[in-house]
Amino acid sequence: MTSPLFTPFKLKSLTLPNRIVMAPMTRSQSPNGVPGENVADYYARRAENEVGLIVTEGTTIRRGGASNDPSVPNFHKPDSLAGWQNVVNKVHEKGGKIAPQIWHMGMVRKAGSGPEPDAPTDSPSGMTHTGKQVVDAPTDAEVDDMVQAYADAAAKAEELGFDCVEIHGAHGYLIDQFFWDVMNKRDDRFGGTSLVERASFAGDIIREVRKRVSKDFPVILRYSQWKQQDYGARLATTPDDLEAFLKVFVEAGVDILHVSQRRYWEPEFPEVDGENGLNGAGWAKKLTGLPTITVGSVGLSGDFIHAFQGQGAGTRKLDDLEERLSRGEFDLVGVGRALLQDPEWARKVHEGRHAELADYDAASLAKLY
Ligand SMILES: Cc1cc2nc3c(=O)[nH]c(=O)nc-3n(C[C@H](O)[C@H](O)[C@H](O)COP(=O)(O)O)c2cc1C
Image (tube, rainbow, N blue to C red; front, side):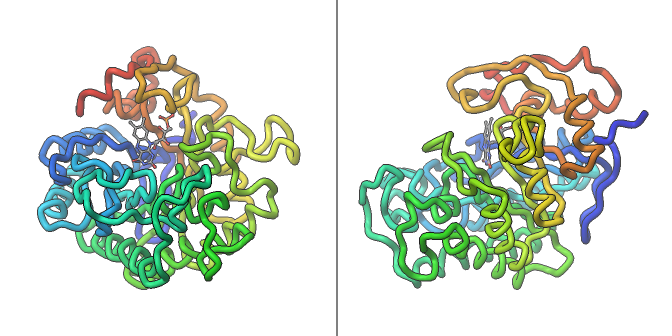
């Protein structure tokens, strides 16, 4: 029987041979923000080994405070864009499909760090998640410029020949800071007591992106309940809240929702549909009808949070994942560490070479292969 992972997927201009998506993973190996030949080869290696869609590492927009690391690639300077053009070309030569992940770190960047140390910190309210006011809240005009900077990057993505674009709205970075009540204290149209009001910033971004790219060019939004500042945080605590939140993006014209969980097998609202209930991507699909991407410990037994501190993980069977996919709980499957370590992971799964799938060794982070 063919695994449901290896069935095609089509949406607008995007046609994928299978359901495997390489999850966005920051590698910090682009000196001066320029992705070089080694970065292009790294993505091309996955493209030639049956990854359906590659979502690149986060790549930062043209606000000076978007990045805390000069080796994170940017998506606005001419030499960086030339580097990305080479990445796209190499991936396409191998028959792959690729989206850049458009990123702004917001207050996760410490003032004074990154490629533009003197740039001001961008945030919703200048307040940390613990309630400390560290900088002034940006003006309306500054927030509007942040929105435009995302749209500029998306337009550039299509111009360079990327197959779609992903907006990073997860993990406690800028967009997620607007979603999160403890960091967004604005009393203008970008803030408010309801999650729907705090979703306006991302709604505006998607609307502006939509205006700047072709109708047929798919736009993906990644979001997460959890934050790096607080793994237990939740934006939407009921299906009704989640439905209202996601409606903002549906109306703005998003095409695919990428729901970041640490472990895909965990139910989103167990109090509603039980311990074996739908996961985050399952609920997002059910409530919006849009295709969704699940992610989180696919093929691995432990989550990625301590991967940066050297934690590995054992392998895990894919049976339950395949069952959920066959039932249509979600449409696409994001794979992070397993693909970071092994460029042939998708091919091995397709060919049933399960014995060749290794445990995840955090030492893989050091190399870009
Ligand atoms: C080294 C590393 C870098 C990551 N960088 C990003 C990133 O730039 N953007 C993002 O949205 N998620 C990032 N993530 C999270 C992954 O996209 C993914 O959601 C997470 O690793 C869970 O998938 P996994 O369990 O298959 O590894 C990163 C994860 C790792 C391990």
